[in-house]
Image (cartoon, rainbow, N blue to C red; front, top):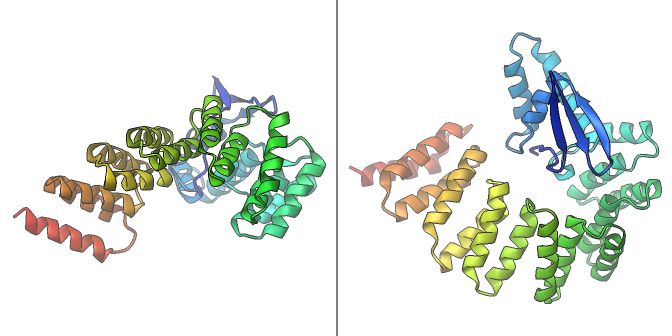
Length: 326
């Protein structure tokens, strides 16, 4: 997982400390110098291990093991305070259980543990966690949305929709509830209502890649390819390595060629996710199709630099390109 900070958090630098404000809970948090440095790197481009290595490098004159432990503890604290997007970082189950016991009225650790179980398809345990969260805070939008998600995954679509609509009654501008209602409307073929829900979600949260992708799929199904591409590009503006948008753009390119635009977003994706070799391969393939052999060669070479182990598939492509440029 690649942790990233919530984008609705306001922040202000005061000396060596960073003051952050959570508008949902209306709470203020003070980050010390180490936490501030870590916070500035929570952009979704690094795994936890990579974040740890970044902090060790930045604090080269300190004990690496101490920095490693402090970084992980700080990440866990930020997660507990709900400053990190839940889907981008989960506490270990042991940490979540400990947090649940330490704060018996706080629904957040229950939700985070439920999300971890949901990712492992342990639906019964996930349900127990979300129900405990609702017992602690019946108005929790996150808990209600996750219960609806669980109903959707288990095929109880009417229940999922009723739960999401009830959530909207209390939280009328919740972007995730609006987006998920759009998905349910699209599933039953009500594309006009689905579009209305996606557009409402984006009016509330313009930097919401999932909603942009879903709206793009509606346009794509209606053969409005330019509108679809615009939506996918919006998603990538906010998340350059968003795999859903990149895969969708590749599909559009097969029926409505948009090579230049696809090359542009793949270049950004390679920069944002340098270890994802599939992006390099797609980018090199587009360069080859356009006769841009030298650029294709450089892409394959870059991919090999980021590959942890020898990748003979990439080596063979690079050899083929070298033969073509002789």
